[in-house]
Length: 156
Image 1: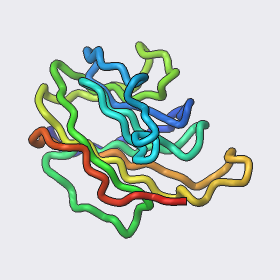
Image 2: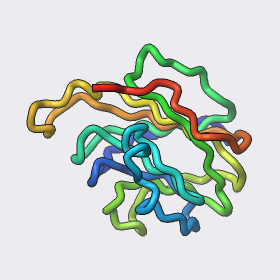
Image 3: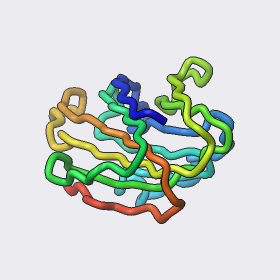
């Protein structure tokens, strides 16, 4: 897979968006525990859910990479990663209430991937939570299955 960068604006309804194998049947509804909300990441078979600071439209940059990127903890408030098994592809990126057939799709080969969410600007929200400079970087690269890891935890 040649490295690719895609800039999206997603409706983060319920403070979340997701990345999944198009054919996945994983259900995130039962895995959004208090711990998952705190770490801004929930995982079910074939799907990864990402938490957001706002439940409005948020900027998301998706990077499809050939290898693990350098970890940049200084530029981000929160960094977490997990594994995603893609049985068939393509990858679908969407807000949880988006119309699935119209969601953005990206071709990837079947296999196991690591997925990293890096979030910045989490402390920039207005008092009503409607405005802010929060932004989200999702990086995906081929990798071995591994544990969910919090590399940097944001705390209010």
